[in-house]
Length: 242
Image 1 (spheres, one colour):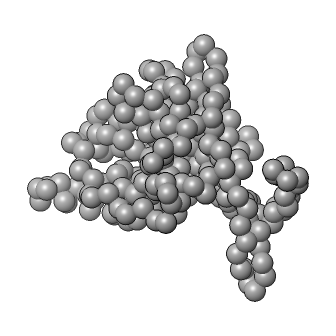
Image 2: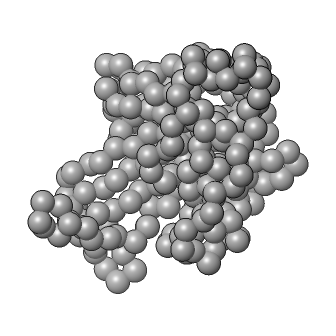
């Protein structure tokens, strides 16, 4: 890596680890889309056997001018493969709305939490309408997104943009839920956002209604930037958890 490149990295944003696991969508040329789970900025993709096995059912929806195509994903050794790919102008969303509830201690009390991961893949910054509970959608301006929660703008919320090399940049949404990023590098970016909804409720489970105390939403958007400086190579793949 050249001294100039190192200086640019320091100027444009610190190399910081992603704070929590998320799902995101990848799509290699000529292949179907794959939903990954891990930490993109640390080049970490969880595997099966391992943490991938905690998921209940990952579903995806291809959004195109021809309409929407929804399908379950197929679990593989390192992700969930969807039976389609996004062509130019298309988009994909994916989520697991049935991730198992878990209990953790908070201020000495047992809290039942619902982890609700979701992801979006875009092929352009053409404006899109929200479809996920916590959604980050392009607005029509390059590098700009609008964050919504249950179709309402979500203000003053941190959004983190990362690359697989570990470069990251943070920004906060404004009062209209808008946030905008510069994209200095060529290659794939993942924008990440999370929100903990402390409103209790219940959901339908395999054995009837399941009550929860809070929902941890985590949503990403993946997009490929064709312009900018040459891509900074990613480090070695991180070891998946068990």
